[in-house]
Length: 331
Image (cartoon, rainbow, N blue to C red; front, side, top):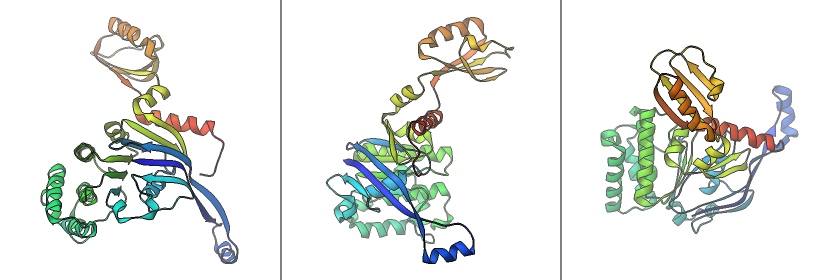
């Protein structure tokens, strides 16, 4: 469904020092720096697949999504979405995709979201019966209720985000580009948005590329992740495989019935954190069974949990490794 081959997107950025004199000089002579926002990445996404597109700030994620949606022309490389070349911006292509950016909105500020829904119906040429059916379904999944009849400016951030998603999906796109759709939302609203995205994917078989700095979004929705840093591909594969590759150790969390005096935690594993009634240990996979047996025999364990390292730590270490292995290039 999505094919990206050796994608490059470079910019010429004007550079000047602060102050009046440098500003005057720049009228006649300007210095430019080439910024490689995307620098030769390649990947493919199958129909119906949910893929997390991850990287630190400035890695090139949003630039790539804008190229895929036809908003930007690539400097070099080949990009295909279905049978279309995005830069041609054909009507039939635009009717198959949507791009949702959590920091931008399409809702009209002083009008209710229902007006935006009607506007999009006209833009996409959606038949009235299909529009009514889709809107009823989206309203039920997102629990929109009376929100659609209130002025947008009176809605909370979470309510606006739900209406944004409804407006973006009113034409039933088969390819979704979601750029930080849960940014700024509370944990309850994040869970609601994640559940809705999964429902839409399963209901319509839509292909999904998701960028997010909330690792809970990625873990809940994306079995596969594509990671880029400084415009280059760092990893492409399963999320579980990434965790095992970067952090093969397990976290053993012990909760105690009573306060435990100072222990030599090294006999159990690497100490991550310790309190009077709990401790977190980092243990090699082949030693987990022995450590658990030893802890249950020697300590007043009330509860025990074995889990992977936090995904945030995994991603941070992956970025550190990729930057240490790569030569320094313009950000």
